[in-house]
Length: 149
Image 1 (cartoon, rainbow, N blue to C red):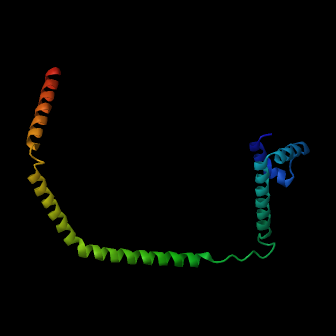
Image 2: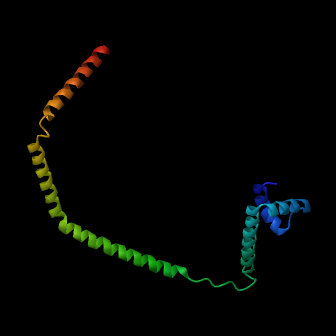
Image 3: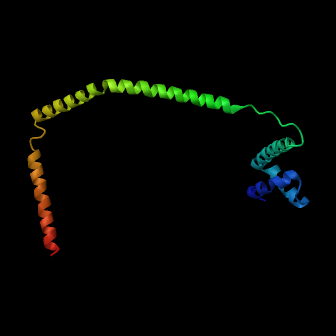
């Protein structure tokens, strides 16, 4: 018998609803397989939990009192939301106050870098390169139109 079959029949094995032959083969497999033995232990614990829960059904006994978590959770969510709002407002005010200064600094830095690159001659051959690329593109386009006529 394989592990998948044993796990499939495990609830019936726990409830004692199997034939003696099937119960014997499952018990022999469980004794030889540690994974299935652990699975059986967990299934028995779950079965015991369900049995305890069924004892609390209406009309049998007084159900166990559960703590009211909703109030605490909602209060915590509200405090987190209030902290987020405070962080957003102070961050926005600070950004608004410094935004005009930083934008002028960016424009000034861009102008200085452009002037420096012009002085170093970085753009010296730029016009020649663009002219050369235009020549190659126009030649290839003309040859392509001639070939398709």
